[in-house]
Length: 341
Image 1 (cartoon, rainbow, N blue to C red):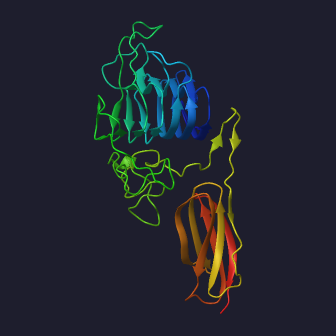
Image 2 (cartoon, helix red, strand yellow; image 1 turned 180 degrees about the vertical axis):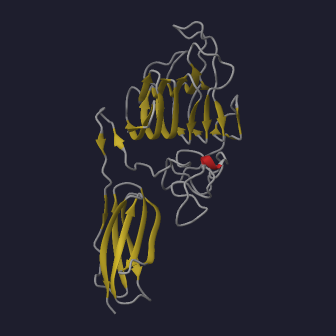
Image 3 (cartoon, rainbow, N blue to C red; image 1 turned 90 degrees about the vertical axis):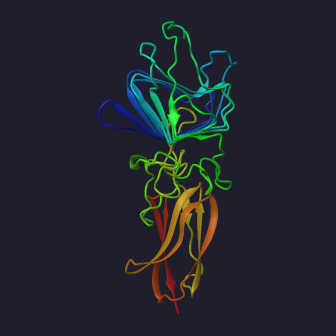
């Protein structure tokens, strides 16, 4: 969680699990930004925001359920949003909710209602059970003068139905989440890959080792992938997060182990074990004593668990080599191995 200059407050890398009465609520005149936030199994509302403006970037809401008996004007929904100035919801994935509505994107009671004020860009809405996708709140008590509703605008989103306002959306299409990795990762045949806003400002991050291709967890080219894993702020799930199960922050460590290569010394093949506590972006390489890279054993996402990689050093000269494990970009471990001919 951090602060940006000026009047904007930034909250990032947060996970909420199993909250029985809502997730994040705000009241006041702040300009709020939430980035890389995950809501898993929350009730009533995931976000209830009443602020001057807000931005939600790379947010996943998996399961929002009713907290109390549902009535005609229930405020229970994953996204309950009110603002005074234009606001955005980008690269978010909202799935498996059972509240009567999915989103309300309105204004304060004292503002006109001629145009949408909240824009949803590059978002996935999938497998949500609802009575109405967007909430209507006529004659909202205690403000009877607020007798109209300002809907949101949906651009380059995957939606269950055609919105009142919006362009270039995918309607009633299965996003194809990856069978092995599960939410929020997309499979290689997902219709959401490279289908977000084509403006370069929305581009996925570039893989420095493969120019022109997206850095995992985005896939394909640099055009924005729709959903949580696309866009310039995407990062692997459960990376560098703070969990708030009892309203007390705790730092979640990055648990991984680079095991001892065996045999060592070896000729010409050695086995390199590693273990991950959670799915992580992994790069496993071998360098010689001059710092030159001689092998890439893994470069991509691995699930949690134990794996063994083999390095066949045929063609390499005798000597000392270094096996380096890089996890989620900024965590590293190294083991030395010796090749004897």
